[in-house]
Length: 398
Image (cartoon, rainbow, N blue to C red; front, side):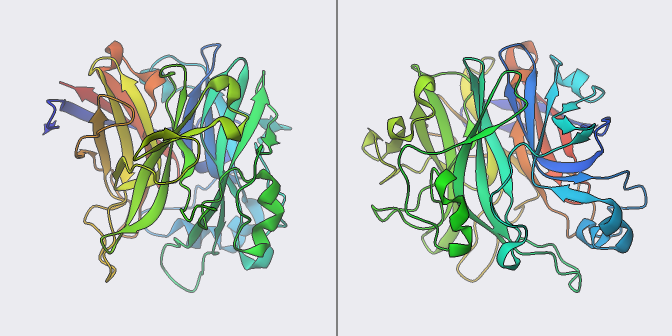
C-alpha cells in the first residue's frame, strides 16, 4: 500500500486490459487517449498517431520493435499511419469501457484525422504531425488543444526506439455539435515566429510558441496538456509543461493558465500563474511540480477532497546524461488542496508491464468521468509503445 504525506492511501491497483480494439473503423493501434466529457453524457476521446489497416496479427510486441515491423514490406503496403483520430464512448463506468464499442470520427467507415497540418508531408525530411491533447466542452462547443511537433524518422538500421521529438507550438481547435468536424482557430495575438522556417506554414495557427523564448525572454509551456474539467471560480484551468534546465538537470515542469470559458477563443483573455500571482502574460511563471511526461491529467476527487495529478514519470536528466530510475516505466500520483498547489511529493501509483527492455510506457492520465463511489475508485490509462493501445488500470483508495 502506498501513502502520501497528506494521508491519502492507495489500497489496490488492478490491470483491466487494452481499450478500443473492438472497433469497426480499421484502427489497429494508437496512443494519447485523452477523454473529454460532453454535455450529453458521452465522452470524446482524442488520440495521436493512429495505425489504420486490416490487422497486425503477425506482430509480436515481445520479440520485435513495432517501428521495425512497420518498416517491413507488408506493413508498408497495408498499414497507414495518420496523425490523429477521435472517437465517442457512451458508458458510465470504467467497468463498461473495456467491452464497449467506440464510434470513431470516420469517412466511409474508416477513422479519419480530426485536424490536419498545412505542412507538406515529410517536409525537410522530418515528420510534422498534429497531436491532440486535452480539451473542454462548453455551450455545445468542443475545444481541443493540440501540439505541433517535428520528429525524426525511424532508422531501420538501428534496433532502438526513436525519441527525436521537438515540440514547437500549441494550437486550439473547435467543433460544434455533433462534434464531427473541427476548425483550427487563429489566435487574437501572435507569438514570435517558429525558429525553424520549415514550420512557418503553421504560424497562423500557433497560439503559444514553445520552442523559442517569447518577447519577455521566457520559453512558454505547452498549455493544454491537461485541462481541469470542472470550473474553479468561473475559470477553466489549463495546465502545460515545458522542458527546461534547473540546477544543471533537464526536467519537465508543470505550469498553469486559466480563462473564463466564454473567452476561451480569445488568447488575450488568458491569465498565467506567476510567482506574483495571476498575470496577463506567460512570464516569471510558478513551477508547480516536475517529473511528469508531457501528457498528464488533473482532476478534483470528491472522495479525497483533493485535486489529483496523474502522469507518466519522466524523471530528470543530469548534465552527464544519467536519467532518473523508473523514467518512462512508472505512473505517479500527486495531490493538492488547490489547483495551483502546493502539490505533494509523488508516489508510485502503478508500474506497467513492458513488452521488452526497449519498450517505454507513457501517456498516463486519469479519466475522472469514469470514477466510481464518488471518486474512491478511479481509472487511468497508459500506453506501451510496443503494444500501442491505451491500457486501462483500476485504482482503489483506502
